[in-house]
Image (cartoon, rainbow, N blue to C red; front, side):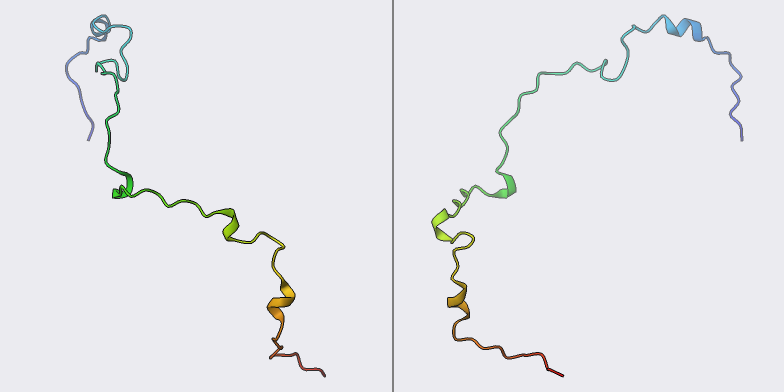
Length: 81
């Protein structure tokens, strides 16, 4: 079904009634944005836990591998043909 317009349009008269700066956001006067205090994020006000001290964990290369494997034996061995 086609839309049929029977009345004439007067396009020339409408263009003079609008100001030149019409566009998105030109109709609403914006107030200055001032952030308000919000509730605590994730619904908690508990202080964060402190990070671990560097002395709590050994650094790379500080493990004694021989001490770890001492007293252990290999249970599964490959079969020789």
